[in-house]
Length: 323
Image (cartoon, rainbow, N blue to C red; front, top):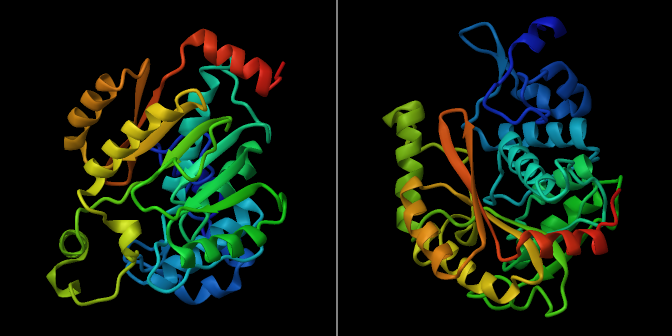
């Protein structure tokens, strides 16, 4: 095992400063948290401990270890074939939107369960709410259109012991709606987060997966089972990311008084021009773009609000009651 001192030097500088995963994985500690991880850990050609990130079970076991060790989860799982997200990237999103809320609060990140966050498409993993509550004490609404995903998310939430009632789950019965059916007219939330479906069809999703595999491991890996799993609602929808985000932005107009900040991940940089145009069309008062770099992948968060500074402060003073 590498020494703690050596590990501390190896910092992933591209991650948020508060991200617990900015250091290389401490496999000794992670195995202590979840002994089943040990069978997946090996020494690579550079003499470092690692796992095979193309092995779905290995990645799932690593995720379970990270959630147990860092976030107080006693157990965690997702059904076979459902999305098993990278924990460091999910944590980065949470930390960056925490900084966004701090811009409304004299630079101080609010750490209270009075902060209510809507996770659009919480997924079977329930990772965003677990990290958000553990790091900042926020409460969540988890919306989902897939009943199996919701059942799994509920189970994972039960394994998160610190705050048993930190999240409310709502099944979205109309696939074309994002906020309608989830938020009531008198709803009062502070933030929305979303990791939208990336591809426009199952065929495009499959081609994207194969292209990613070839880039990372070579053509011989095409027929292997790798950790790019996910159901249709997780990976693709009609029109892909561009269409999903477009519809979400237009619908967000109807809930501008209900929420301080709407946010979403935008994976394709080429979609930004259209996103900015739509935000201009709906007369968003402020738009922010937060760039993120996870390994070789570049992505970004786009955030928008329909509230001016006075409205934000009135809302904060009334709802947050922070000093």
